[in-house]
Every structure is written in structure tokens, then in C-alpha cells.
Length: 308
Image (cartoon, rainbow, N blue to C red):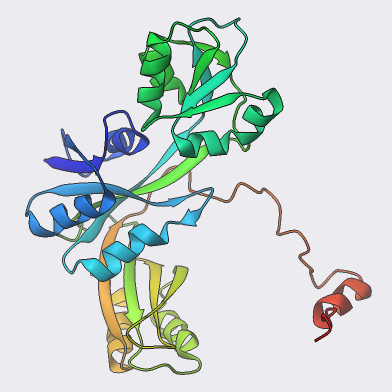
């Protein structure tokens, strides 16, 4: 089974294929863009693709999600996996002085504090595997690659530094896309896109009420404004359950009766491992609870308004 991914070989997208369970012995096929992956799956029966949809730094990747929602009509999510990676500095001399770091631009951004504190020069590559290859061939021992441990060790490099990320762990949720709905596993999620026939007050509350009426738990909601109808939104909603479950079917039927348009984006097994979360471990700063002192509650209810 061919699985298209954003190449070249050695990227995080490529490594995420190893986590898939829906396809035995996948044959990775690198492509130059996410759009090419999605369009290939849309027009080539039997072909699959893997694309990122969420990460712990940026949240949901709406550009890619919009391509699945608005640009294709027969591509469905088949499986979700979460790739968790650490990053280390790899070089040819573990005791050498580091002067330059080489890596993918995203990795360099996630290690900005490490780079800034040491005044290091930076060089961009298309992947962490390519960065390790450059360092392996580099004559200067001051040049290191920022890469996951598995990538650096496979390249035959040694660790110069371990704690290089601004926040620990890089978590990215990838989805396997195909043209058929995954079979029921007993612990599934369903993603749909719901669009009202006209802009109306309280539409989202009505949607939530129909899921609740059918005992279906909504786990995420993302709204996307539409160009075609000013003031109107399409809502990407993920809920618990498989599309064949009676509760999910009941909610979909109620939404259709309500006048909404519904697009199925996929039913797929829930990922059993670690989830993608925000880098912060606390409540949002400035949050006020009912147990807060009266002054804090007063500032929330009557915030200071800037003069006109």
C-alpha cells in the first residue's frame, strides 16, 4: 500500500508512517507538498497519505484542514497517530565548542533559547536527516545538527547537548487519509463539517443540543468563516463514536432535519497513546475562579475599559 508523505525521506512525516496500524508494510512515497498528497489520494483509488493536523506549538493546522474540507470531496481520515520527539544537538566531537547549528527551520525556532543564549549561527535544511548528513560531512567540529535521537544516532553522530528545546517534547498529530471509512474499533472518533443554511443566532448551541440529545460527546469545535456567504461559518466538529453508531447517526439526522449541511471527514480509532497538549502545564494566566477574592471577580465582571 502506497502512503504519500511530505518528503524527503527522514522527515517527521516519514517517521510517523512507522506508527500506523491500519496498513501492513506501507510503501512510503515522498511528495513535494501537502496539497499534492491530498489530491493524489482524492484521484488515485487505493492510495493513502499521511499529513499533520495538530501540534503542541501551533494547535490545529487550519491550512491543511481547510484543504481536506474545501478542496476534495472523497478523502476521509482513516487513522490518527501522535509522534512525540525530543531534540538533541549532534556532532562529530561531543566535547567540542558549538558555533553553528543546522536543522529544519521549525526545529531551529523551537530551540531558539538554546541558540540565543550561546550566540550560535544557524543554517536551514529541508529535514533533520539532511542536517545530520551535512554535519557528518562537515570538516568543522563546531557545527552540530539539531535532530531527534533516532535520526542523529542513525547518522553515526554523537550527542553534544540534550536539553535544547524551549519546551520539552514535540508532539504532532498525524492522520492517515484514504477514500473509505475505517471499520468500527469500539473506541472511535468521528469528524464532521457542519454548515448552517443561513447565518443565525444560536446555531452552535442548537448543534450542541442535538449531539447531547443523542448522548454523543463533542470533543472539539473549530469554526471557519466562509467567503461564499458573508457572516456564515463552517464548523469542524469531532465527537466520540463511529459514524455507524446509532447515537452519531441520530445526531446527524437531527442536524439534517434542522437544515444544516453535513460533510463526513472520517471515522477512525481513537489514538491510545499520549495526546497533543499545550506546552503550558497550568491554567491560562489571569483565570478567575468562583473561589477567587471579590476584587479579582469584580475586575473580571467590570474590566477596565480604554478611553474612546
